[in-house]
Length: 318
Image (tube, rainbow, N blue to C red; front, side):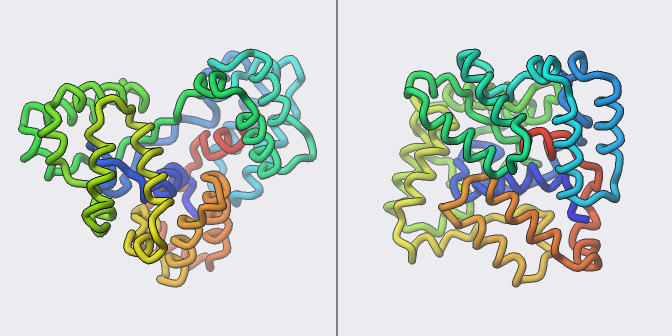
């Protein structure tokens, strides 16, 4: 079975063509830590004991296939009483939205007999319909940190700054959002001339100089957040002529490196499909990998954890 822990890595890789030159960006995709459990910590005091027991059993079942796991997770969630459903919080990025909008989001996610894709589309339509000022209340998702720091940065930043960044990276007490906030503060404290020396990620260095210069200008702009830099870089990538886009090789995560070339090509094609959103890309890739012969999956993913993390189900449910 395709290792569920590759899920987070896949989501990061899906946006690999727009990774910034910040530390921890564009240097491959390492293991992001052990699964955090069968459900979020803030569900602990809300879920009834039988639901928690069922989610734990589902979490510990290593033999069940992905589609069946998702369906069983949905069945458990649908079986909750309305009182419990009303208490479950929306994902952190939506919690600053007006309560009425949060209720609508939960109504979509708990709607029976609606596919996950249909629910994602309904959520997207709802978010897109919100006034611009309201949409600003949605917090950007922060991507997990990669496995290591780009070593080439140490010569540019110096050992003191590099050490500070490394300490943030290795601090297990900080959430991804807190880590990114610390990284941004450190990077914004540096002179612009130092930031301008930092190289772009390897997969963007193949671009013509004029496009690299545009991206570099975004990266050294201290008025922009990391998320804004990612978005603006993505927009530049989207506008590139097709022959130049083809120069950018999608940086696949390690858990996909051992796949047959034909499968890697199919995965890369999905990555590049701009008509698909992040969730759709992940689902298509996952479906593709689930169809591989067992011996291929075993040889390709033998080093990956087979224990599913709660966000395998929860992030897709919400």
